[in-house]
Image 1: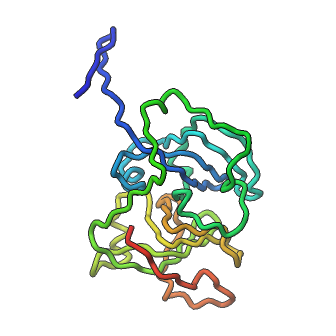
Image 2: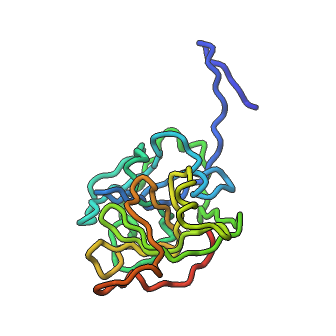
Image 3: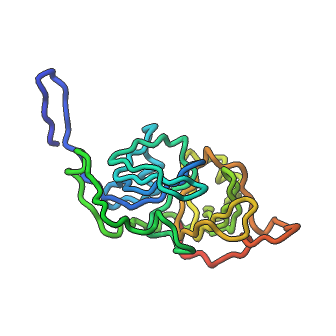
Length: 229
């Protein structure tokens, strides 16, 4: 192990090289687009659920108003409180449903790295999906922060949804083929092939097959799941 000691006798170890993942982060009132860092070979799910720190570092962050989607400000480095996060997805997992400012590259703007970036290597794709324990896909409707999210959560074979959720000690619930609607909306705001939903922000979860809609419910249409989370 590479360890060095400063003049006060403090021990320092070399930083672990990490890969930059272009990410979309949704809070209650903002959309944040920037780089999140994961250890090589690790999935975004594992990196965030295994992080015990209260703040998530994001570099080259662009912050947009969640309602108007207008750019508010930029930050070379942002430390975002996990408790404020509602949704997280890799940026290239989002389908282009409509023109959005945060998906378009900014003309004439060069992101400024901060000092900690120089020990990082960047993977073009940033995807680290791997099959672990086989799981069954369950078409699920989630309610959180004024949004309805329709997608697939994954249960271990012969497990009930109730047990899977109540026994989880993770920060985020993985969804695949996630479509995000405003509560009163009929068109999806976002569509992500893979999305992480904050457990702290979840208001309710229900199997889609248990719903009996009174009016139009476009979020009940179920695309085929692609892979387990």
